[in-house]
Length: 317
Image (cartoon, rainbow, N blue to C red; front, side):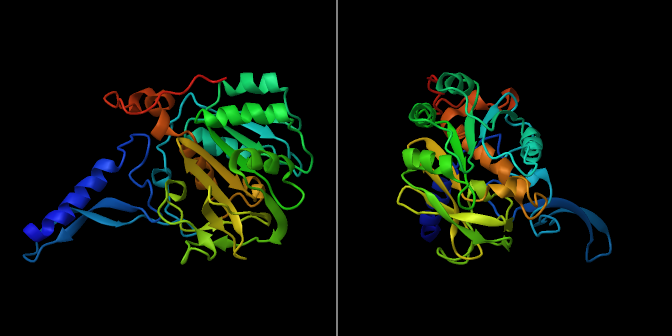
């Protein structure tokens, strides 16, 4: 028994360190979730009984676990929370309807500024009602240094920021904000249009394994033509494209979260290919930053009233 004590101690530490957050599903952090089902089996004596069996979850046509129960967050977890969107690229019928519908499943509402930026004052006012900001760049710079200051204040207060660009030249404001918040940029134009699986090695194509963002995802469509993220020490690679280029990376340090992504066409073009809707829902759930803000950002009946460790949101500027 003494030989097992180190293992048991390690297991106890892992379980204690894992947040029991009710807004997350039991699949959280697993690329290939399991499911429990009740099956009738025949005993050796010929009698029958019902047993609970654990097996891999049923898969959809792309090979990902089927059903919203295999997303990162439970449905409706973020009722009352708003995703603010600076939506500059609105061509080719890109009206954000598909992401909006997916986000609604988790309780998020969406507020967009389309084609043009609001004044810095109006942006600050709008962000006071939002839990996160998504920026979808185009080829023209819309954001002034004053806008960037407002966005950085929002980010520094712990609120998530998703920065979307695409193939050259559709990353003007993505690079402005990326440099200001993350010290990086994107560049280039690579033909993708493939579905990638889980990474087999750190530098190869595919999705990061065993992360909240990739919950329920073994396959993800990379986008049609995509930009390449310039890696740095601040970012963790999330998605390498089929050509080996870094398509998306994230920042998760000091209670602050952001995602930097070079393939916004996934938000409207070939939406029904592998994993897109689930990924969008996972990203919004992760950027809400419940690990920092706790009960303040989740639906009332999911709140952990005994948890005093979570920080309350800092007053928005």
